[in-house]
Structure formats: structure tokens, C-alpha cells
Image (tube, rainbow, N blue to C red; front, side, top):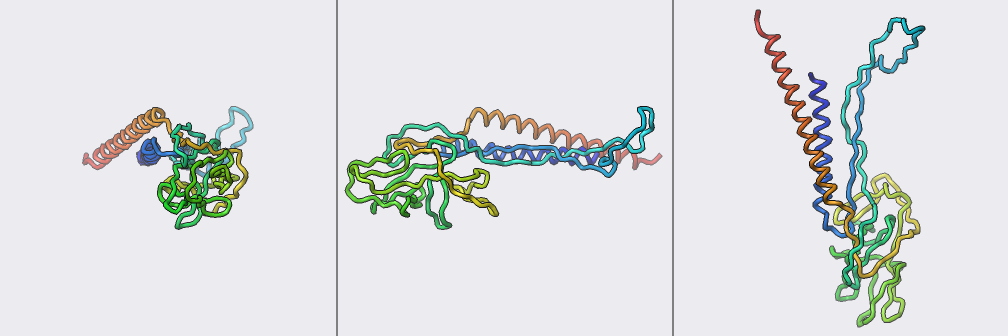
Length: 260
């Protein structure tokens, strides 16, 4: 019964990974600009030598030379991706709240580890007039870090990221797209960076900036709760298979070892 034990163990571990992903999505149901994680699973089969041979039979009455294929299923986590689907925009009215409308569009910010990408446009100004994120990272513009002149009264940002102060163009927020979203990985604090070993090329984007809005996460709490219940039930089923397999092994061992 070792095959049943190992198959159930792989399935239980796979659902544990799925549960962790669902829990992380639910924990960020109110995080501005958050993108949910999706996972997928598949069966991998351990194959024997005779499984690779396609036996040619002269007629339907010919005897089989090889035994029937014998596959052993092992559930594996096959895909874990970030869903960059557009989240709904919510009105805030804040002059420094910026939302990106469009799936392939990012703000660039400067961190201690270099430039990063983010969808969180909840920005603020420092006393020196520098535009920064909630974590204090400078927001990048076409000319570097964005520093606005002191004493401005009318502050507006166009859809292409141009910043106007008292009707004068003073800076521009950098808004970029990437050639392949799959090459981005989450870093934490709602930031993204290129995956190790991957190259991310910046491209022009059709996304635009909406001032006075913030992008809500694309997490559906009801959908995630349904997935959580499903994952929990599957985990319990696999655990039951392991318990049954263990009980059968013990019974077989006791009967074989019993003296006659």
C-alpha cells in the first residue's frame, strides 16, 4: 500500500501549497493594487520500461507480449502565476492618489535594492516636495526622482503621467509596460522585480493614469473562500487515504507475522 500512501501524501502537500496561496490572497483583500496568485496542479506518472513500448499485434487474437501499462500518479504543483487582471478603481479624491487603468502598466520607484515596479499609487509629498510611496521610496519620473516646486496651488496629473503645477509642466511620472508579465515576481510591499535569470524589457503601454483614484485588489473574497473550502475538503480526503493505507499495512504486517 506504499503507492497509495505516497500518492495521498503528494496530494495533501499540493493542497497545502494551494491553501497558503488562498490565505495570502485573502490577507490582501484590502491592499491597494494587489494582484492575486493562482496555482494549478497536474498528475505526474512514474512509468516503467514496458510502458514505453507500443506493442504491435498481428491480430486481435494475438497474445500480449508485455504486461499492461502500470502508471503511478503523483500530484505536483505545476503552475504558480500572478494574475494581472485589472482591479476596480475606487474614488479617493486625493491629489496624490494615482491609479493605473490597464493590465500592463507600472510605476517605477527607487529602493535600496534598485528600481522596482508597483501598481500601488497611494503617494504623498515630503516636506522637500519629493513624491514618495507609503514606504518612503521615491517615485521615478522621466528625469529621475520627482521633486515638485514649493508653494504650488493647483496640482494636476494628466493621463499620460505629466504633472502640472499652476498650469505649468513641472515633471512626469514614469509609466511603463513590460514585454512579458510572466517574467515579473513579487518582492513584497506590493513591488515587483524581474525573476532571477529573466530579462524584462520595458515597452510602451496603453495604460493610463487616473488622478484621485486608487486601484482595488483583483481578489474576489467569495471566490477565494469557496476555493479554501474545496482545498480543505481535498486535504481531508487525502489524509483519510493515508490513514486507511496505514491501517491496512498494519493489519497485513500483523497477519503475516502471526505464528501458525
